[in-house]
Length: 74
Image (cartoon, rainbow, N blue to C red; front, side, top):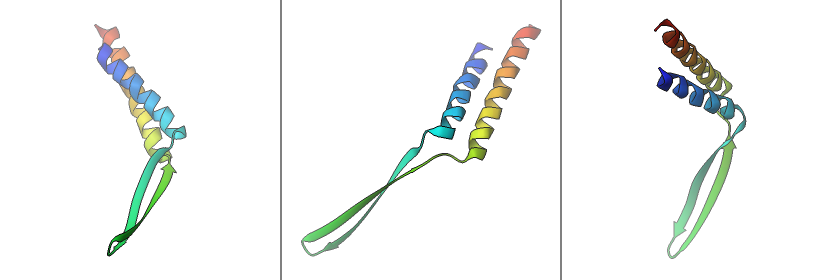
């Protein structure tokens, strides 16, 4: 089950990266009066919740362990 192991490895990298890499979010607001318009764009950068990151890492570890055990039993 090499596929299960590699999916777990990718999920592990994403879980660890989600602790540190912020995700940009932008919001656009504006007012339009007649022929004139005013727009404001606000950009936020937030990281993923540590609970979600930990869940991703634990799921990845479980997938990698399951793949190794399945390969060893064959």
